[in-house]
Amino acid sequence: MLALAHRTDISAIIVEKVDRLTRSLKHAVIVNDWIDGDARRRIHFVKQSCVLSKESPSHEKLFWNMQVMFAQHYINNLSEEVKKGHREKIAQGWLPTKPPLGYMTVGDAGHKIHVPDPIAASLIQEMFELYAASTYSLTQLVETMHRKGLRTRDGNKLVKSRLASLLKDPFYCGTIRWKGALFPGKHEPLISHEPFDEVQRIKVKRTNKKYLRHNHLFKGLMTCIECGGKITWEEHKQIVYGHCNHYRNCTQKKWHKEKEVEQKIVKRLELYSSKTAIRYSDCTPEEKQKLLKKLCKKIQLGDKIFELLLEKPSR
Image (tube, rainbow, N blue to C red):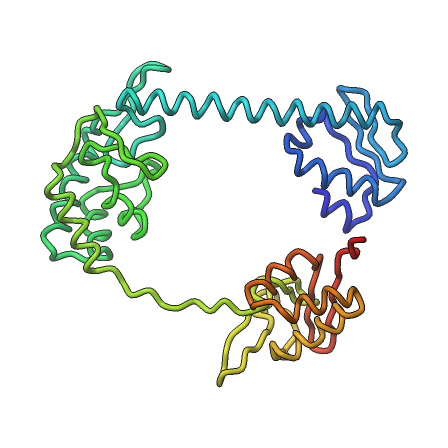
């Protein structure tokens, strides 16, 4: 919202009350920066009869800061209570969230438990049996189970990744996995540990090889100056190039060499701060990425245009 207000030169925002705008101290800092950027800017808090601006008296700014802190406290306290409830539910042997496909929730609020779904449970059992027989790939199993009637709770077809995650869920053999840890459950298991372990062994054997993903220096840092799309970086004959993907009918056609773009950035950094330019030259590629993310508000590339907007140098 603030980015839109900045781009379109909106100078007034109307909010019901402070905690409808933000409940985060981090976001409050962004709001303060927007307010301080222009004396015309105002935020009106209707229910609290308060108007926040660059020239607001100190007591109104104090009110704003206190309300943000109260809102942050509310969120923190709510989070603590939810986590406490989850821990208690797990200690009782029950999953505190919605169960996986094949189970249904029954009972009143505060006393809900999970029992096998009379329709989906048998299909889940058959899914494990077919995969454990080592005759079905994940793709084949998706199609087979769809024909047999296995559906998501919304009635849609299971996708391959979803079916793979179901095959890894220990909930089906009576164990609750929560925050990376395993806990004994009181729900009725659909399969025993032996076939579940066999399925895991088969999945490990069939796991596809992981291919190397290139982490180019300016990956995710630049956008096209015409369409605003991300600049894609790829390597050809040991030279890294960046270009627009033309997802939005963009007319930019030039491919930019990574080294030439970096030279332009170094020149801008030298004007910005000689110390920063020296620091940049001594960084590893990973450190350069972090430094540029910290310093740069915007980097845009075009066929004949290069635009780099930096943060103000710190004193």
